[in-house]
Length: 538
Image (cartoon, rainbow, N blue to C red):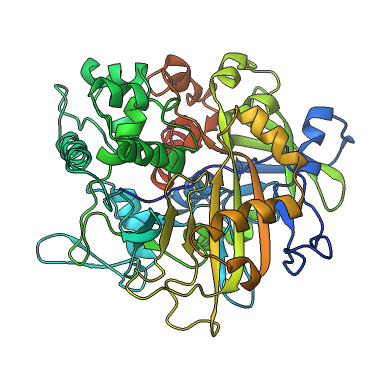
């Protein structure tokens, strides 16, 4: 309920605006000169070829039963479902040199760490496909006598889980409580009580008001109306005035959606709190599953059965319907040659702004491209001497948040370690770029150097950890141009969103979390399962 989710999806085969930069130390003589690192990001140099459209003719032709474009969570879950159903003549293509999309991670001498999505909440009852997958990979170890899942203790987030730096000191939990007057604390309680009621509220159609996957939520007008106002407007309508509570709501919207509360659909904002209903025999509802490398762990497990079917460094630039098959042309980055795939079925497991660009003789979908907006992010992994905890203060937690900061704080990538590098940790720092419009923020991010990002990050960390800059050895930065779909007003229940996921002539199928309107792992996973089932039914 109070964690950051960072799903879907890295630009796969599209127009990422960020460029991988070489190793860049800070200028000699300044206070950051000792901090090494680089700026990384999606393969924009190759993806920009999509705009230019200058490709050589195909030099190779490959026939395949099912081609999956995009190796993020949706594409991987679709491929896994098809393989388990007996369709093994598949190929999965991805632009990057890795799978997982935003569920990507890295590693250094201190620890593995995430580059994006880094946890999974306890799974809601009824999500049978996801529960089955988690049992298969040992995340769910057994089922208790009361029917509740027993999760692998090694993957459950260890205590202490979270803290907030507020008014000069750390408090337990990230909902502001330290120093709040009674009236403000009463507002916080009223809000949380309301969200708890909405969590179990049912619509007249017999469906949960806020479900996961979102497509299973009630369609009652009472709830649909919430999509017409922003989360901020909802808070004002319900007469919430506490600045601490309003900060928390804005934090949550930026955390889960990369979108400020005044631009986030109230339905989506409430879903953040009311959608989660996970239960377990050995954990509380708000517990999460996490790994040092983040959700890269889950991506690799999804791909385990068909890793030999995955090809990276592939840019799909043209998808065309023919009478008997779908023709998809792919630019191979390493060989600089074009392969033409002829597939009976194609799954476009990429964001809609990419999918509609590469579709050739089908509807261009300009209305769809105009309706789907994406949030840019900056993520940094900071290798540093473990921050000391002052006497009487709460020690380093998994999730560490700063009140009134532009950032979402940082996650301790070493939190799940039974043992780690002596005295050193990797802190994964998250910054949704929300000051301006997404386009403005992407443009501005292009102008930043490694030195300028270091200054932003260190100054933010220094407010809670004075002098920490001297203890940092490396800051590596990853820029995500179109990291997650923005669930803006009038989007969640829009006709254009619902139409976007419909198959084309029983041959081309779509799977991506942006079709759900929310970039969370469960939505990406379920979109892949849905597309696979559509293929099996066809």
